Length: 418
Length: 158
Image (cartoon, rainbow over all chains, first blue to last red; front, side, top):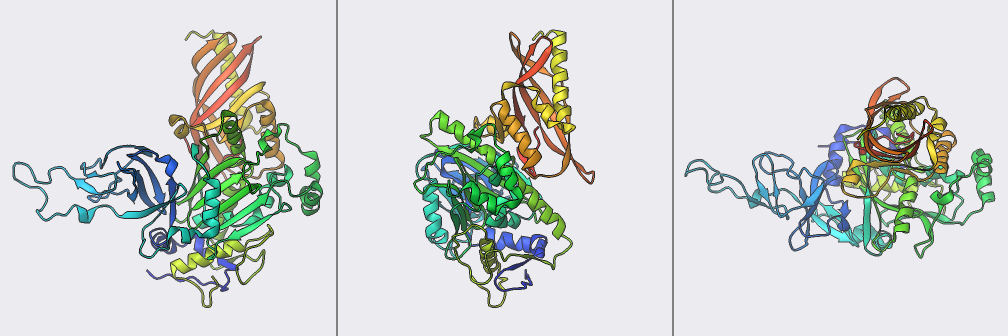
């Protein structure tokens, strides 16, 4: 398949709307990114702690089983029967010593190898599969899986992929170790289906400009404001990023000056129950907001004491699921678990500081369909070279995302920056 | 379980008002159906069946409900829509003095401004309510949503 993207500029400060609507590009993304050399986030090790544990997940639009074998080694393989293509594992999770396709009962090991099929030798010497049928050669496609501090990533093209720690970069590995600094406890899941292209969500996560404008709750109640100390970090290839802020590093006066439109509200509005905003400073770095993203499909997020991973699951060119795994630490007491769940009111599909994202993405998808040749403007924080910023009003990481996307897709403009 | 007809009638009317207050966008009236010491939670069946405590929304007293509504009115931005709840009959599960527990199925449709409707959420309420002097008040409502895959976003209460 050949694809053409007409980039108006080589620094990705203009992004054609076509990229959110083009079916061919979508198919190519599945092939060149999700089934290509990128490392996709699969799930957390803590979700499959015991031998035989498995979970089903999605890598792009490919259904995948993540499974621990009897020796506790972790495997990931395409959840599609070699025989006629049925989904082998239909449950979301479980524990088993083998996976059996319901259609004709073909059997797979917990490592994803085809190990047997009924009537292979026929019945009473008649029928059956040809003598030379080789089960091993038709086993489902496997991913290479690696854990970084308990966060599982997989790639379909390990021969082309960078080593995982190099892919995540110094900032990526450091921030994962920060979140997963000790055994965690899974608190549960949330799911949201947003009627917009998956890359609009990837952009949203890299756009610190919108955070305190779209999510007025942040500013009104002082959870997060652009006037706080913080900034944006990227990896060397600018494909991952982290928006972050330090708790209690601005004043009400700073905020009033910056947010003239909402200034009146800053004095007038106060939560009757302040526990929603209470923050236990539990990390040595003092950040109350940290949202590192990992190209192409993952996010770790801390808002106060709510902690989660999010996985982007593309569902066709015009929709994606945001699958969120909320966690705490195994050594949290009941009061801390309750506090984390209370903080979860801020995030997720109903979150005080996140519900707007779903709406913003959907209205972009709606309004851009008719204008594939028009472009988004991505200039806040500057044009040209990509670099880290010690301020919080920027869209630069969006340009970083597109630069790596274009590289993997083979559609970089002439003289592209990276 | 034997439930006195007037108790059943009071609680059925309470839930009818619960649904209609949301659907009429009288969220402040909806809050007033709760006792001061109350609990309102939206959870998903997926989590409940795994004994996982995660919540989509959680208010553990009436002030938190007031805060939610005030934030909708003045702070949060969300999909412009109308809600329509359709409730099933009450199935009583426990009684302790004035306190009654019951489950009740709901379907919640959303209609956007240009008139297209969709099924937004289906599930059940697990309710504890007080009936005193002929008046019903909500002590606890846990929305157990079968629809774990939230379409777009969840803003107005279920």
